[in-house]
Amino acid sequence: MNKKRSTELYQRALLSIPGGVNSPVRACRSVGTDPIFIRSADGCRLFDADGNAYIDYVGSWGPMILGHRHPSVIKAISEALEHGTSYGAPTELEIELAELIVQLIPSVDMVRMVNSGTEATMSAIRLARGHTGRDMIVKFDGCYHGHVDALLVEAGSGVATLQIPGSPGVPAAFVEHTLSLPYNDSATVRKVMKEKGEQIACIIVEPVAGNMGLVLPDEVFLETLREVTQESGALLIFDEVMSGFRVSLGGAQEYYGITPDLSCFGKIIGGGLPVGAYGGRRDILELITPQRPVYQAGTLSGNPLAMAAGIATLKQLKQPGFYKGLEEKAEKLINGLDSLAKNAGIPVFCARVGAMLGMFFTDRPVKCFADAKSADLQRFSAYYKGMLENGIYLAPSQFEAFFISSAHGDNALADTLLAAEKVFASL
Ligand SMILES: *Cc1c(COP(=O)(O)O)cnc(C)c1O
Image 1 (cartoon, rainbow, N blue to C red):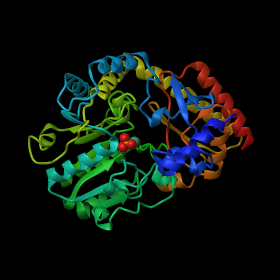
Image 2: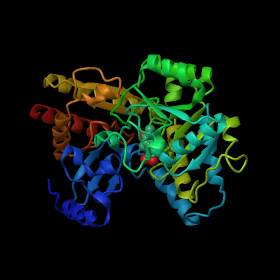
Image 3: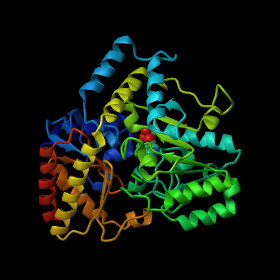
Image 4: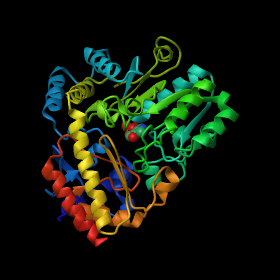
């Protein structure tokens, strides 16, 4: 596979962009390769600067649930573009996207748009602290909530991939109010909340953890979080930036039947443009400026192009049978990978919920970050490189989930499994 142009672009990028990339995991360092520069995409395929084609299982890290360049999304963006790109004043498009989210997510009475998932979680935490008058927050090891200072503790995604505990530049005082507990460990949550519950402003959690690889909540974990927060007066925040509209139309909260106080969204609701949002109970959301004093603002928040892309995307997701079709594809793929790996004598732990998938190279079940870290990272790197050489584009880290879109057809799935069979045999 010719990578000449990508290599040239990477060398050039390194001179003017730190690490040559604008988000760290894109650099592919942990798997020992250089990044591939993309020129275009269509449906389930990416095309790189050298003209190579790949079947894409990253989907821009989650947003592209309809595949790339879906006609209705392109049309909506083009139409919005004709009118202008940003006004810094309210538009009808913002109401329309807010109404769609409120209609589809029952726990959300009101929603505020921001520009990234990071902004959504940062703002939700500020709001929880403003609402409760408490400072401490609880998060879980291996969950990633964006690069918010207070949340860069035992974080997943790039932080896990780079194997750093936190980050230089975050003052100790900024994280001293953050407690990070093991995922799926209900007993520890109960114990901590019993001791410190009255100081805790919120528990923030990925209700389906997708930033340490894919780790599903066990039967009692989310229920326990709901129970202990209700008892202590803390708020429960579901960070559904990844799982929202991915696990099911109503997100992980619908799938598992747990109602959080606040929810964070991003990725899919922007249809491939930069968006985040946080929403929830009306009495809490009304504490935000300008109604009341909890401050939060954004020059480009509710951007008309992003709103148009989000609205067009959510309208497609509402079509009857959309998730059923998507889940059938996801199920076929994960079952195929699982049995091919086993046939080749490679121990893997596979998981799936909705259109979120994960595969760890380990012989034991993965229920928390410590389990995830036991996976064979060298084997993952070899698998990643082999798949890439065979035209399959995966996230370059064992600590990431993978995604399919409605644009992944039978041929693409069959080609993926053929590639996997070949690569497993070589590991
Ligand atoms: C991606 C992600 C974020 C951060 O979103 P950005 O748009 O990258 O800032 C936050 N939480 C979760 C669960 C995510 O997957």
